[in-house]
Image (tube, rainbow, N blue to C red; front, top):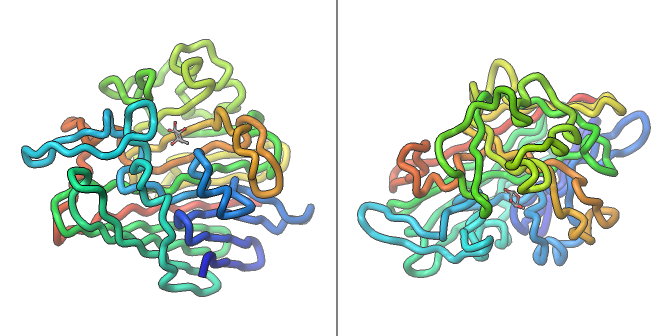
Length: 326
Ligand code: FUC
């Protein structure tokens, strides 16, 4: 099986075996069907893509500086694929693999992958599962990882949302309940302690039109033509206030997100015009905003960040829930 489709009266959700990717979330609205996430029309385009559209990235999401880290006194080097760093597990990462679909019903699909790195890279054989569940207007994914050796694990889902279904996300309003953000160097590696967002374009707590945040005259914004930063969530959790919300004032559609992960990487899609094999069309620049619920970037090398160490007998889990309003 190369894909599976979940469906109910409100949504059709397509998950690809390649990259365990959330390839389509189609809303059945009064105005017809609307694609709410970016995806690829063909697996071949996905295999060549550079944007990880909807993919399950790992085993270490985001960047590891130089691909290098030390675990229990032993140095390890993963393959690098982004300005000298390992991004999203590197060129051999989870998203490049065809996963096994192990459970598939109308409202649930589970995919599984056994993965190991090149010698000297990330230790252990990692067994990972991801389950996507559609329940009414809620779409949840749960990731689990176990290992045969002490290792690092921090996979995450990499969906790009555009509630308008086409065009750009500039007019959509993003709220992120995060009082701190990680600023980065020119290769995307956090430079230090989380910074207070107060008085900066990174203060999204009250809801900000993305086009306004992306146009701000701030060196961290200009360096990446928008946002490409990890927000340190004030109150991660699967209940209570959502950690983030995206709203499209024109259509009235919105998305609320809950997660147990400590950070949300917001990437406003600079360069997406290079993605010429999108679902129905070449995408314009900023065609979607990636909302990645994850561990801190470069946690592998930062003892002061939450640990992503995983030992045999333990299980890493990560849960994120979306609620869509049409
Ligand atoms: C996000 C960003 C990266 C990269 C990727 C496609 O995870 O942090 O910069 O461009 O998406």
